[in-house]
Image (cartoon, rainbow, N blue to C red; front, side, top):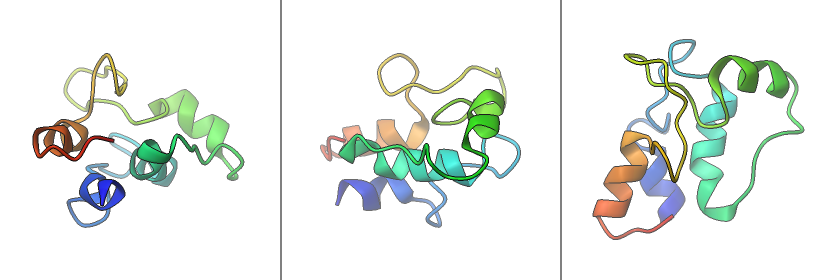
Length: 84
C-alpha cells in the first residue's frame, strides 16, 4: 500500500526522466518504506552522483531527502496517513 502510493503518478514516483532522476531514483522512492535501495544496479553510482538517492528538484536543484526535503509524492502519502 505504501509503495503503491509512492509510485504515483503513472508508476514513475514523480520522476521526470533525465530531469529529476532516472530509473534508480524511481525505484528508490518506491522502495523507501522497505528501507531498500537499488545500489547494486548497473549505473547506480553515476545516477546518484547526478541526481542523489531520491532525485533532484527541477526548479532548485536541491536533492530530495525523506527527512530534510521530501519529494511531493512522499508528502502526499504522509498526508493520506500512509506512512512510509
